[in-house]
Length: 189
Image 1: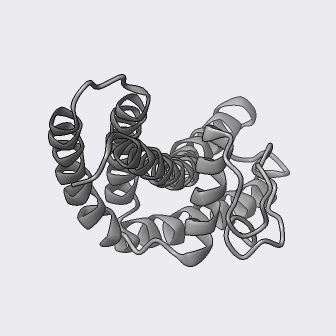
Image 2: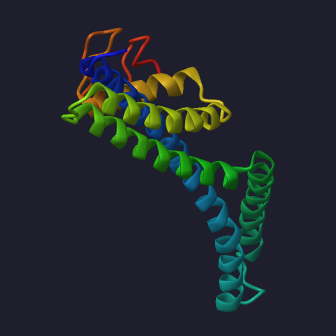
């Protein structure tokens, strides 16, 4: 059976991993949010702009040909982006990223709180740690299905180290920013 210090150390390690995973999914959510907003804007903004140009200047406006050409190119871009979005399931990925971000932040807090906790007995700490570990294992199983890349893992490691102000085992540096380094553990992303 582990002692209280070992349980706390394990909780701090797991809290780092949970924070890193939440950061990965936060970055994915931000990217997908931007892409989806661009598609939505193009799908609404371009037709509205063309309609506005026709209403303001009339169909015989001398620059209507170039306006329609630019609008056509933008709408074609929007159409291709929409097909890509649908086939790549951006909406599903965005929803999953938000869910995982939230769940991993909760796990981070639980592990961190247990790591700081002045629990009085090994049994109490062991039970609490096992409960959190069971929840974390289920979340990790779901997250692994999302195809986290090695680069994302290094980025998540850097985020976790930075959040907890811990030194990296590869470069022995406590990250102060998310700028990638050349470290094979917390950089190269």
